[in-house]
Length: 297
Image 1: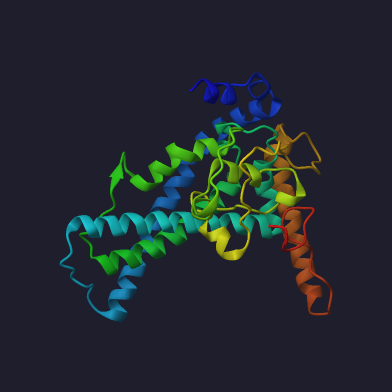
Image 2: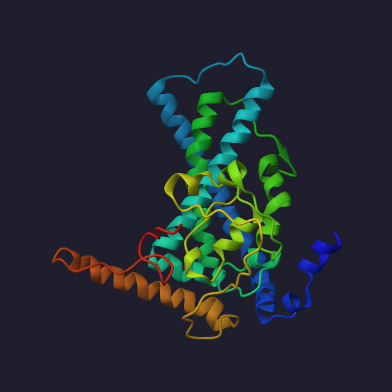
């Protein structure tokens, strides 16, 4: 516990300007979280009902299982957890591949020290896009599970949260945005995303760009080739991104610039889409400093 406390409350980390910016973003995030989450919850429920109704119309009444309620509830709990994790991965992958989305997501990567407060260092538009993508994935997979398992199947929850999500949040999520090096290696490191995996994701070393984009599971990265296994010993990482017009820890750098730069990137994409038919090369995508795919990951 003393080692954990020293790592989290290390003076260099706590007194860094990046940490104060994270605290300010935390306040902004909490102020906008209710509206964003409320929209997402409504959308998820609507999509789920539409998918279940569609399957019923196409395939007939839902099957009636004789399996114990515990088994059906466990299956639904796992299905919704996988839906969240896959939705998060897809959203994160897009934000590292699409220039306009990267401009918004870059605010999160501008943190130069890692503490749990970095979880809140997310541009409001970035959060809104994530909410939409999660609503789509959870709604579709949840609707399919609702039909396949029957309406009586419910998720195991604690404080209205999926218990598997709570385990992830309290066991590893907070440590992923910290400077505590806890690596999962071997088979475990190809299945689960350890704190060290995500610290590599935040690394300022180009060798680590665009890797380890999963939330709690590493299997999605493993499947598409973006998994970067952490070494047992900490490699001495630096964090943050370059190329800012304004102070990355100020209002302009955190709130205004990402939105303006995202709009500019959209306009460039629109221009290049008109030129592509004439043989012009499209603009590069992903985090600056890498081609579209990095063979080192």
